[in-house]
Length: 134
Image 1: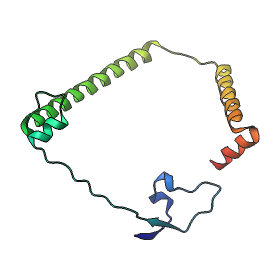
Image 2: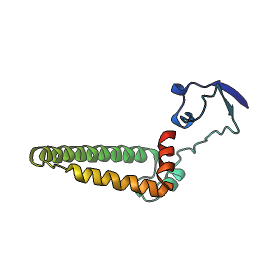
Image 3: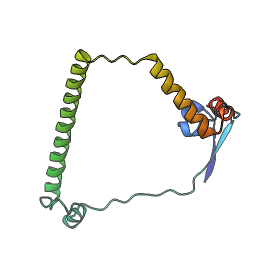
């Protein structure tokens, strides 16, 4: 099955956007090669034991629901704890730590990265071409 779509860059994901050096296409030809349907297994006691072999306390659907509920609660608690710790660290850092980075260090790092890119691209001309394509 195939069909054509009008090219509207705002409606398409970034992988379909044209490069700056290319002409804007009028249409996009789409070919669907295959459509698959996922069939999920039933939640029988046998399948539950097979899918959760490490969880000895999970043997039936009710225990599975309870296990999943407990795991979600643990994850929620852990994420809240991490968030609180990060906020605490950020507050301490903001109150007591001020770091000034010298401009010479920033320029030196920038130059080092540009030199590295030039070396990877095979010279300044090719690097300039690459930046123009972006």
